[in-house]
Amino acid sequence: MESATAILLSRLDFAWVASMHFLYPPLTIGLALLLFFAEWRWMRTDDEAWYRLTRFFEKLFIINFGAGVATGVTMEMAFGILYGPFSQAAGPYFGNVLGYETITAFMYEAGFIGLMIFGWGKISRGMHLFATFNVMLSSTLSAFWIMNANSWMQTPSGVELRNGIFHVTDWSKAIFNPSFLSSFAHMWVAAVELALFFVIGVCAWQLLKRRHEGIFAKPLKYALVAAAVVAPLQVYLGDDLGQVIGEHQPAALAAMEGHYHTYNKDGSVNTGWHIVAWPDAAAGDNRWAITIPHALSLIETHTLDGKVMGLDQLPAENRPPVWVPFYGFRVMVAIGFFLMLVAFYGAWLIYKRRLTAPYTGASRWFLRVAVFSGFLPFLAIWTGWWTREVARQPWLVDGMMRVEDGVSRMTVLEATIWLVGFMIFELVVWYFTWYFMAKVIRHGPDLEAPVLRGGHESLGHLEAEPEDDRAHPAYERP
Image (tube, rainbow, N blue to C red; front, top):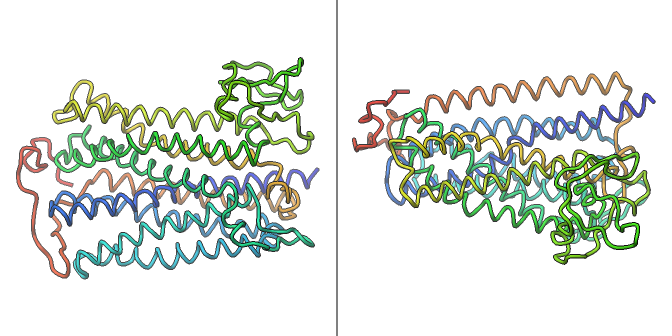
């Protein structure tokens, strides 16, 4: 009994560590791309507003990156502490892949971040843009290896488990395992979407407060138009990943859909998609559900009566929990469609020239929704990650190693101490991250600092146009 409780605490501990860490890397990945775009626009147009925006969002990027490093190192440590047997067994593949991620994140990326932060005015504008490009590229490569490691746990291939150790038999099959490309594409676009709505939320907040309107109106419009393309792309990639899960992880799909019975009592195929349900693992069925007939087959097989495997095809001990993946998946999907509608409506307002100062009526209500939307992608990524991880249970490496075989053996007291310690650390990081981010956002861009142009300073300022902050009666000096 004590062993089962200790294992549960260790699992909750790692779930906490991973969830808190996962707040930061997606924003780093997406924001690096947007920083590159803003700096490129400054170089192309020599418009000082783009320089101010780049420096402003760069501060937010740095805060977020630091939090990601702190929590990332903690998560690496948690692997060894909480999942020692797994770390040892999977070291020949998993350890190497995490090593590649370390090279890209802590060597390649960190080096160019140093140039990006401290290179203003000391290196040429072209070289600085090159440094920002490499920050963008290295963060993507870091995501490549992290998603590769996780995808290998979902659909392991190219390895053999011999004497408790995973031996690599084919590196190409292990790296390009069946779910990797779809998972990586879905996650990378999710990171871009998160960064776009983060920028949308920050810009909308500034405009609601009537601060720095001349600077933040333009990136808001750019981000909304980009989101109108990225949001539906993300929905498409999610459907593609669902097809992969249905083919290679039918148990995970069944848990995500609350799908218990492959066939009806008369032997026909049960194809309904449950909008909401009350899963009952003990009874092996849903107590009740609101269902759309044939919709699950349409989604997964693109036919009205295609067979989708239910949980009844698995032994009870191999069935994943249903509640978390079922509702986690639905929250993620609901947020995805809501963000798509926000992006479409914002693009329509831009097209109709209704998203311009002064912001009143419909445009002001839209700005409020846009600020709220800035938080939703974080929840979508959280619920999507919980869905992905819980739906794989009871396997640590799907079909090859169970959780109880990979978790470290601890007493309840030891597991509790680690859980409390990690919770305190992650909460401290989270608090100061958002404290300093909020402080930067409230202060806004620095309009008084000189524009640093490749090895020398230029004291260019924004011209006093009708929308210029300093010409606006509501302008507030930071």
